[in-house]
Amino acid sequence: MNGAGNDFVLIDNRALGLELTSEQIQKICHRQRGVGADGVLLLRLAKGDADLGWDFFNRDGSEGEMCGNGARCFARFAQRHLDGRESLSFETLAGVIEARLDGESVTVNLTPPQDFRIGERINTSAGELEIHSVNTGVPHAVLFVDDADKAMVSELGHEIRHHEHYAPAGTNVNFVQLNGDGSIRVRTFERGVGETLACGTGVSAAGLITAKLHGRGSPVRVRVLGGDDLGVAFEPDGDSFANVQLTGPAEFVYSGQIEI
Image (cartoon, rainbow, N blue to C red; front, side, top):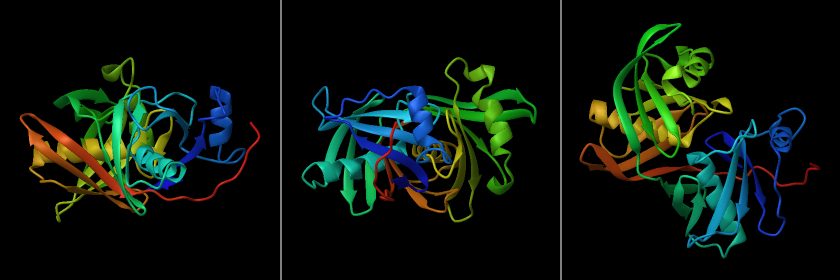
């Protein structure tokens, strides 16, 4: 499946009992020697009161707390394995996620944003940069740039992702361009993956920080590298935001089998 070009292998693990190793995940996600994906999502039984649970792994085999695009894909995948319901909940390491489905469009309620850090400055190979941060389920750094097409996403994204300022966990890095029509463009360097065509929690982080610093109202429309538009809706809540929602596509590509 893919959500705005961010692609995943999804497996119904309720009866299989799979415990994938990092090497197996890397093989599945390898674009020449496996299926090819940005990550792997395993559907499992819930441990608490949610409808289902997930186990999410990045392409390098590391476990991820949350993924906005993955959450939308997971919701549509889960819908197929339940009773076709239009809303459902599932457990992630970041908390329980609620999803509403309308055809290929899915809206997920993200966990409340935490740890806003605005206007910090760090030294990089490109000089001193002003960077803003927030955790939208996973940690994200946001840099505003004049032209997202010219941003040094691979080089600078990798450097900031591993910067001592964000040690030991590191951070995802978003390069954000403000558009004249009120929308924004975002390119994201993800931990454990590299640059992807879209990152849901990164889109959300970029939208919230844009709203905080540049007065954009809800919802913020966000164009990602894959060409899709996502929507970030929210309610102001003092110095933070509540009821953060991410809306965008979730598409099935194909199904099959692989030897692991």
